[in-house]
Length: 221
Image (cartoon, rainbow, N blue to C red; front, side, top):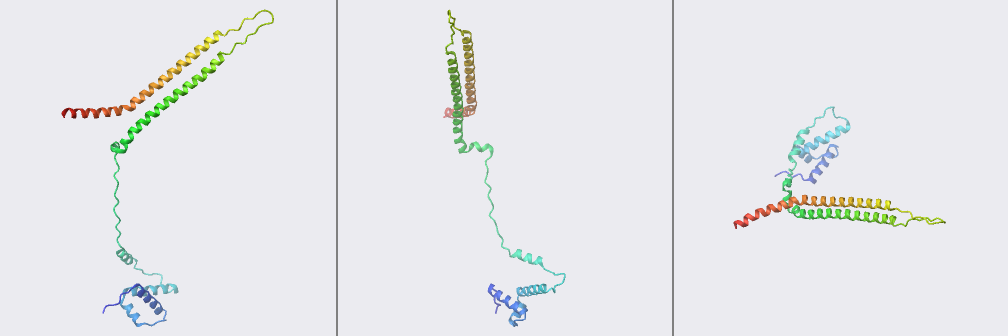
């Protein structure tokens, strides 16, 4: 007949009996036979005696522990855990970014938004310049149209004060400022047209290349 298997509950009961046997409370022949046959009970027996001697102070200075064999046994009994291999996601190269559908869809919108933004900036600059010019021109006209204060003595007649020279000077200054504003507006419009052509040059070149490729194919057909 085979030996009974040491289940967890049975092993716990054997430890309790072993502890009582060491204290002299129980004398069990069956327990002594189990200790003689079972290696785990022998190790428990030795461990309990070592603990009791250590608590009593009967242990020598050198205590031999077979730690290496215990660690090796624990490693052998340790279950092997295989983690799944992580799959790396392929990142597109910089040269392939333009081939993605999202970028191809976004590029025309970005081009239109850029053109609208530049046109809005130019329009805003023109409106602000015209408003400033009209405001200054109105204030200057108000100053020029102010009636001249005439003085007339009590006796005789007095000649009115004339400001023809000053009016001529103001007229020249207004013409000069108007010419400068017109020049600045012209330069801003030229710069906007130049920027627009530079920005649309790659797109026009790409469309021209596509037309050049499709025309020979159509000719062969």
